[in-house]
Image (cartoon, rainbow over all chains, first blue to last red; front, top):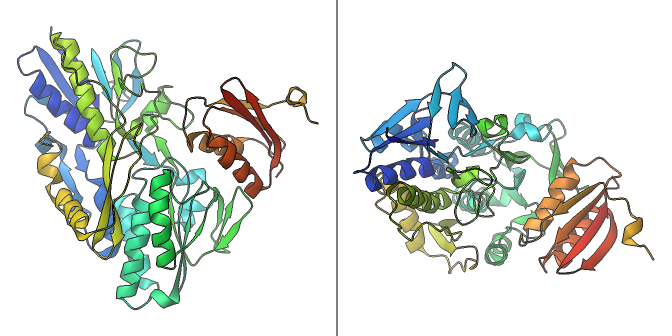
Length: 379
Length: 82
């Protein structure tokens, strides 16, 4: 009987892990299956550009089947429960998918309902639809105060709200509207970013561009009628347009199976990426509770580690690569066609270099070539 | 002088081994979910906590019941007053 490997979720991490497994186990008796709810692969980092008319939702979606190695089965179904005791994934319609090894790559989801009033009043760019709607609101906006803030930690792509602000500032200047618009940024902890070196990098840029910021602002309620946001710390801010990153949680299937913490993140070993307390179950990407960025980049590096570990387990040949050190690499747009880059791991914080056009064009190139180089494991 | 033993703690978070700003973020999450009047303790081994936890409590105007050094970690205690 073949060894059954199931990858739950066809995002960056799940797709790459499955393709690497198919390649690494080509000569083994294995059956690799990706189970995905939609069968569509979405390149989420592109959403940032939609509100500025620089990207379209259509461009950011491909068929998952087309990105997977031919040896991989793809099942598109709404699986609702993971049963680690019986080594099964179960759907509401009764379909059951047995596994010998499981990779949970179910990502995260927006939960604006966690903050009263947010779903009605807040814009964001953490889905293609919301980003397009925000683009319309920005087009119609002429003067007043725009607040860009974080509705809860952790959230996907941590630098994206800062990038959005820098792009927005540049866009408003280009349109000659900047002197009529006040920009304010809110952040839950005592600086403008979780990682100290990045906060030190970003703070002078915010100040240079006349963007005010309110730290220690943990969003508690939004009053759509008064156009006010209120924090746990007792601060109230007025806005004319609110761009608030919604609180995030892990996938519903994780919580419904009782496998996650209060927010639905899977307890994961920081180096082996095994789900704590379970054998033969791994977690990667946004789905984990690891103290690294919820980003495609983390999922990308983690997928390599998990596929190496499973290949090792199946073939019995040690590869020596099955250890995750917290590596994340990403870009941060600073506006005016410039960007910086961040490369870090558990023990080495990022040291973002001075913004330059080179990093911006590198990011643009990566966004365009993603489809050909990442899911197939070329990089 | 307040003795930590006299304070009834409603919820204790053990985040030893987690690094800045992890302990503060865990504390904020717990305070957010706790009813007004609750006393919450957080156990942190990160030296950054002795700066950012009291700073946040001060900003939020909650009652800071103190930092109590133990072997290899510190226990920070706060009361949610509003």
